[in-house]
Length: 138
Ligand SMILES: [Zn+2]
Image (tube, rainbow, N blue to C red; front, side, top):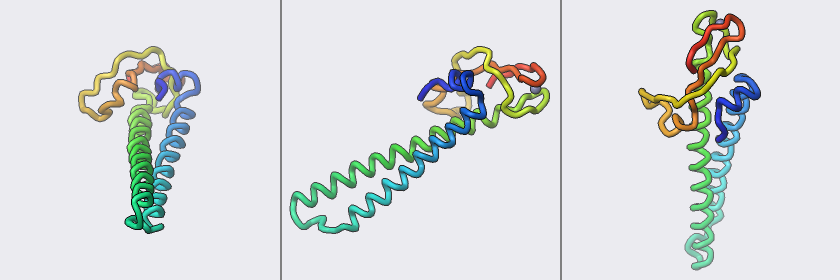
């Protein structure tokens, strides 16, 4: 995952947020496709017909299950990070949503543990409202 601050600086928050929503939902759809594929492989039957068939079915289920689980987890990570920043993107002075520029970044403190492992990937950002010039930490 690229640094969110650099991406927001380059493209703006709205486009960054839109891209994260699309990315997250691609992972969600992929997770469901993996689930359907696992069920289809099991539904094909022949699990205990012979050793080769059993190994094939088990390998498919293991691979598709792992891919589905990874995509499922990834969906929540990406959408969680996007929602975390979105909820803090209103200017505290004028209320303008997502109209800010990133001034500088620093290490993020995750006191409430809301970000978990993602705190390291999401630096704290000092931002300035483009409408009224107020600054706040995102
Ligand atoms: Zn403002």
